[in-house]
Amino acid sequence: MTEGETITLTKIEPAGALQARNGKKGIIFFWRYSQGTTSQRLPIGPYDPTPGHVNKHTPTAAGYSIAAAIKAAEAMAVQHVTAKAEGSGMGEILQQQKQAKAEAKAKQEAAAAATKAAEVTCGEAWTEYLKEREPHWGKHHLADHIRMAKAGGETAKRGTRGRGVTIAGPLHEFLPMRLRDITPQRIEQWAKKHAGERPTMARLSLRIVRAFLNWCSEHTGYAQAVTGNAAKSKKAREALGPAGVKTDALLREQLPAWFAAVRGLKNQTRAAYLQTMLLTGARPGEVLEIKWDDINTQWRGLTLRDKDESKGGIDGVRTIPLTPYVHHILNRLPRRGPFVFAGKDPENYMSEAHKALASACSAAGVHVTIHGLRRSFTSLTEWLEVPVGVVAQIQGHKPSATAEKHYTVRPLDLLRLHHERIEKWILEQAGVPLPQESGQAIQLVKKA
Image (cartoon, rainbow, N blue to C red; front, side, top):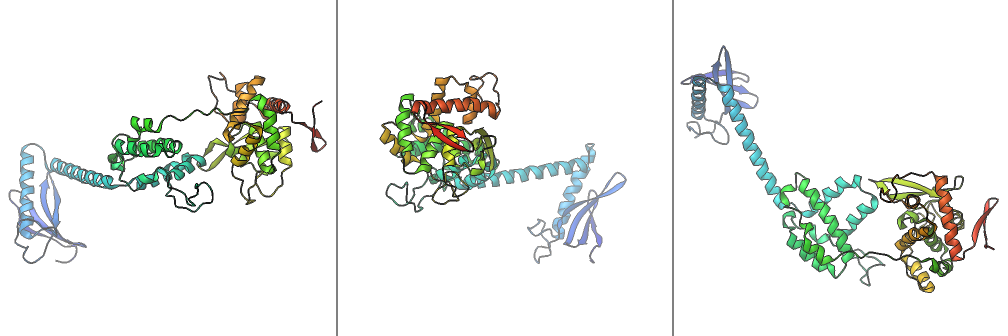
């Protein structure tokens, strides 16, 4: 047979004929039959010329012998005649066969997916989870996920309690495990283990893994590997205990001692940072990341990278008033790089001033944490009965309908009216000289 040639091999009883066509991929068998006034062909399969197979009536993996092709064509002919007698035809039969093949293929794919899902590891799903969710998260939220799953073993000078190397994050031990092996019992064992070592990190990790397993249950590639959400185990929550409510904040009568101690610190950059924290009520990271370009002296504004508004690598910002005293202490700092609170590397901001704050608090005889300074701003404003919406906008809190029925986004000049009043009152209670503008310079003058 030449390429492209079609020949009839034999007639088929009870209908049609067996044909062979020599195509580019070799010889293919067809059953030809009449459907009304037209002639139709149905493929049977490729010709298998292997010696020893030519007389077999059963097709091999390679294809059909002539005898096997005749047998297949006869089966098609019987189906055709039977269908015509019942008032239908090969069209319906072919549709049924097509549907049966599709169902068989779907079952095979489902079985293959189930097999693959049974062996997928937590680490494989975790990597895809972070990649998919990163555009929707802020950088601090993403950093928490990375930190909780770190392998550890990295050389570090601080925070290792004498070990010299970091330890693995609480979630790291789950990464090599198969997803199907993360059961409520396994989560409970993990929670009991970490409850005594680092309960705060473990509570955060439990919330993270709970969200992760929820995502897995909705992902087509991992849904079959998880049953329910193992991280919702009540026993695991109980093992880690509730998070303690932090209430540390400066009292009005503690302000003089605290300010005196902070202003007396040798490192004036850290002293300015701590005072700015108290007088703006901003989040620690927001203050650390202030750049010189964020200070607008013309309109007396200070732009902060708002944590709640920053998602997917895009910095959300809010602008608060640049109050006189904050402007004064920032203006006195050396400009060594882009950041106001520059670290040892001028191109980066410094680390949080925990040690400096602890030293100042020890000297003042008070206790307050870095985040407690943010709480202090909130509590101290209550002495002045400042509208809660004003305080919320300055601090970057989400609007609350229960706190203020109609949340108003106030312009900078209106915020300044309240914020400067807050700063003035705090400085008066602390006995700190109030700044006054004199030409272009800001000078400190003691209140008479």
